[in-house]
Length: 104
Image 1 (tube, rainbow, N blue to C red):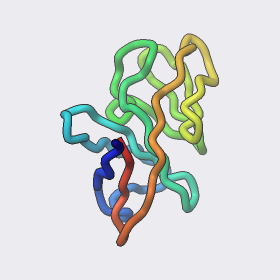
Image 2 (image 1 turned 60 degrees about the vertical axis):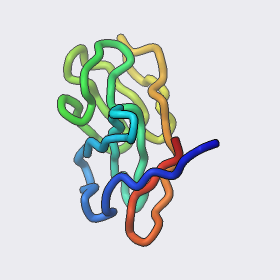
Image 3 (image 1 turned 30 degrees about the vertical axis):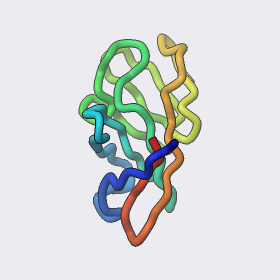
């Protein structure tokens, strides 16, 4: 059964930046603000095992992994630029009482 996890306050996710958040099992997710929406994906690039929150660059709804310059759409997790071919895991985001939450 899915568990709702509170990750951080809404104000901690800045436009154009990537925030890392921890899950109860120790895994990390990357949070992105695009306009008024917040998106969450796995934090690790599916191509080169790089942390997107530490090494990535966000432009609009595209995150670029700076290890090999592959890109993903943060709204869907789909790869949009080589060498990335495997989608990022995405998590539906809910804002509850100004807190960013996902289901895991």
